[in-house]
Length: 77
Image 1 (tube, rainbow, N blue to C red):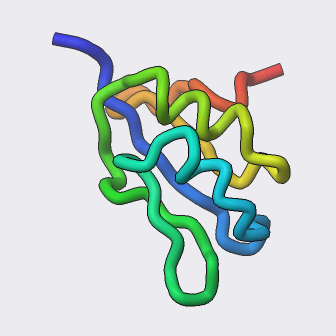
Image 2 (tube, helix red, strand yellow; image 1 turned 180 degrees about the vertical axis):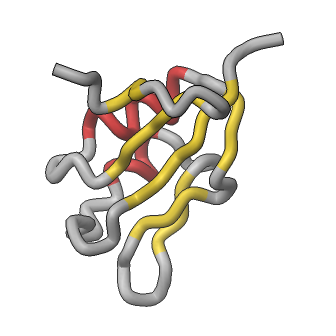
């Protein structure tokens, strides 16, 4: 069984660029105000969601491992 992630979008940072939807259409949606939100707060680890986080121009998406809370993205410095 693979890792499970907690996926969050900081709406105070989100600028509605839709890069998350472009990279992971099944993982993110924009609401009427063009603010992003994950389709599911908990998701199986996958490259599309990670690509969405990595390509967010304002780094509004955070991903942590469920259970441990260890940072997946952005990586801890």
